[in-house]
Length: 307
Image 1: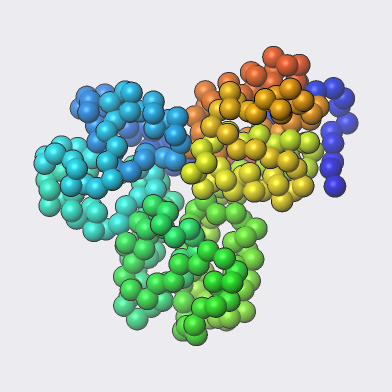
Image 2 (image 1 turned 45 degrees about the vertical axis):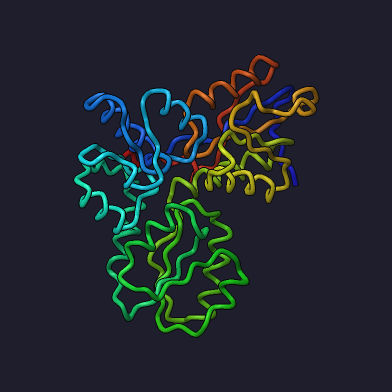
């Protein structure tokens, strides 16, 4: 059920918080600092963060994105992005004589460290998207080869009998989906060890989107389609009963929506979305008579750590 604000007229509800999280700001700052110190080109393994337009901007400034450290000239610098990398990747970079600039999100690093503490006799259940860089990086630090990647309730229910498994969680998953998976796993494995959850920044952004979606007729999420956290925001809005769209920037808003904007619109952005793209979207709605309001539950609006 919609819970529209009492105010009348065109209203733009700005999810609080939205946009860059601490880990992403840390990674972007590491890139800027390294580029200033070393100059271009600066090699980056995979993407710094999952945002198509930010990647294009960094490329313009001198970033060279590679998929393997073997593509980096011996002795050059290589920057590891916010999602982190497997231990073997770090070893390969060192063997090549590369200067490593590690911009792994501190929360992801904690997951890697938790995985590394496991012994060969332990079992790891990794909740996350198979093939996602963060998931592959965490698995690549695990002290055990007994690993199960779980994406769905059916996969959780279908696991074999396991003794005292440890569960780690990709930081950008949907908090409601993760809670549901934990309930299934707890019923299956009463001795389950819960070694981590989604990060607070993801949870707060999802709670804020849920809040504005219940008060809006359309929720616009600014972010890239290959961004896990941005997709989870779109899904959160839809689960709250609101039409939602995920676009890289406001210029991509479909004409049929642009010409028939509802009076109450929610706006948020993925944790990898630069501030200027959020301002651009807000300015678009402001120019069409929408009055902006910061909105979000108290829990979502708590001050976040800056690494």
